[in-house]
Image 1 (cartoon, rainbow, N blue to C red):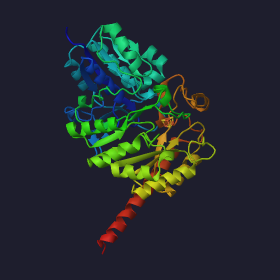
Image 2 (image 1 turned 135 degrees about the horizontal axis):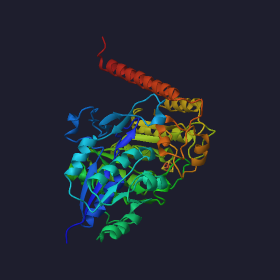
Image 3 (image 1 turned 180 degrees about the vertical axis):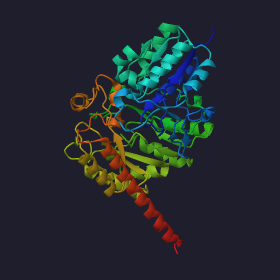
Length: 467
Ligand code: SF4
């Protein structure tokens, strides 16, 4: 019997800004590995591929680039803004391959039994729709299945507008395989589990053209329930993999593919650190492998002890991101006090992390938030010696803050997910303008330049280089 064949697609991003800060479609790559384990032939088409050999020769494209830590810029093309963003003084882009190259890639692929399209931020749905449109043009009658974050959080919108034949909500473990059996008689040899499965294959990162880094999930879900966060809507449980298992996966990518940069994708890496993260860091230290780790999803400052900080440093953690959110006592929900945050930063500094390595995520544009509140938090972060990283708030349907966001928002966020775009600060108070945000960013930038200059000055002085 011929093998079943599936095409998996990571769609374009449509946005004012997008950077590859260790951004890979991890869920889709897990699905690819389950399908392969079940004996299927799997094809992967990455619209965001920064290494496509033909892209540098495409007209009208800004080039992609890479930094040593694997992050970088996507290819991008400027495109017209959606009409209701006409007053936003920023350019709008499609990030990733040109349509021409995407269509050429589709032409070169054999007809699949089904196409699986993932989705990211809710306001990136135009990229998802474009992918589905081109797939339908290419192969009449091949079912298109849409899943991922947008499909889960804006299920009704996706059902109504995406043109996908099937829209799946929530974790694919439950829904995807029964659907594939129903629509193309695919009988898998392997069934993914909702809990930790020692037999689960690693995500199929080998399908990528080049491995700048690998994303690692040591746990799934989050035991906390922050008002603005969608974590529990996307995966309602929380489990952790045994550290030995995670360690083996890291070494696998390093030994077989030469990967040195790893990004932890966990929502709660340091929860239960004594049984989970600490043994993992110890194994990494003992291995003496020269690996670098990054924590783009943020760490809970409350769980950073002196021991955790030291072992993170020795294990090779290079990028530390802490969720500070806001230093305003008015808004604090007791998840984290200022004192706890200061203590965590002290431990990190004592372990040898620099100001550049420690970034504090500061939420900007919360419902009704003012410029003063953000500035107060930025100053707090700078005073204690960490780099402020502004994270613009995007309202998310189904979260606790959603109803308040609808009330306070200047745009109809419940009508069209395009208005969830955090770049337009959809929910900030009326007095908080985009120009204020630009101004705050400029001040942060100036402060970091000043700091960099003085560090250079003292280094030169130490070396006796100054005349
Ligand atoms: S913001 Fe972080 S801690 Fe809070 S629920 Fe989301 S993932 Fe968990």
